[in-house]
Length: 308
Ligand code: B12
Ligand code: SF4
Ligand code: SF4
Image 1: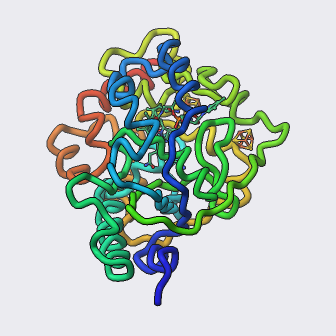
Image 2 (image 1 turned 60 degrees about the vertical axis):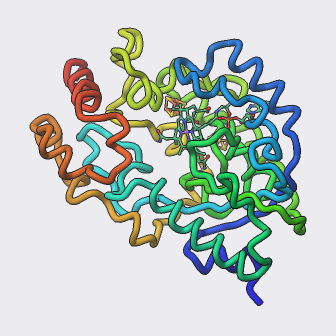
């Protein structure tokens, strides 16, 4: 009989861990302060559903175990370095939410074959990728899949941090994984390399983060950051790129579902500048880049151009 972890690998995830569902009391305290400091910028959804966010049993009544899966997205090919940079998580033609949700649904079927259909709460959403009040990195860390680095991302000891996180909540008790102690040591490469100084004390101020400024922020990029975008047009990988754990361990992913959007990786600066609304819609029809939208992406490219 397959185990849950074997089932997760068989549907194409790269790692799987299991944590006991319980309240995240320390994270609750941290989050209250983080929100009070306005470090979430205008992502007001992070203020909502606080009780559910810090206790999965309030989000999914009956939940006893949190299954966490990782999917490596480190690409085999990078963009031309002089072109406006797109964060690697958004290279794929198909948005990672779609890819992970499909795999989580396959995994859920296999788990139901093993434990019966009562092991999931069919009355509540119980499978999550990114968009629900779930502290996914914390659950990945609790499920023994790595530690939260000083750049605030989950680092898996064999995969690095270029991994997507998916969550499945089950109503059954299971054997739980042990936590891996943090292995950042005295390194501060991510903190010193961040062009906008968004990282401090292992915490992120989203108001200063290029990822936020180029994707989520609906207003113009504040003037103080315009000259600090460091070539980033959509998202930012700088703190992850400099991390020794990625330099050493990040391996090219083998997922056919994550094949890049057409020949986007070969576009030079001129091709990005010439991008029309129509071409954008065609090339990025199913891509995560759509989150920013054509107008925002073009504005970001313009800001980069004006600072060349
Ligand atoms: C909002 C959000 C953002 C925001 C804010 C990021 C942030 N650090 O909070 C912005 C837009 C900036 C962002 C950027 C990115 N994101 Co994002 N984002 C999220 C989202 C939707 C919620 C995160 C959240 O709840 N933040 C609130 C803060 C307070 O929580 P947290 O960062 O998880 O911090 C927890 C711990 O670090 C801990 N903690 C931190 N410091 C301390 C200190 C103490 C004392 C204690 C007790 C606890 C503690 O407590 C916190 C609460 O549990 C998650 C998906 C999800 N639902 O979890 C994806 C997610 C975190 N993002 C992801 C990715 C890939 C990115 C980018 C790499 C994309 C890119 N290339 O541009 C960047 C990375 C930027 C960075 N350095 O973190 C992945 C991370 C995968 C991984 N391996 O870590 C996630 C998990 C999505 C997914 N399902 O794969 N993101
Ligand atoms: S994603 Fe970029 S801007 Fe945000 S913390 Fe990392 S290096 Fe800084
Ligand atoms: S760059 Fe250094 S401090 Fe930052 S996450 Fe990686 S190992 Fe940790």
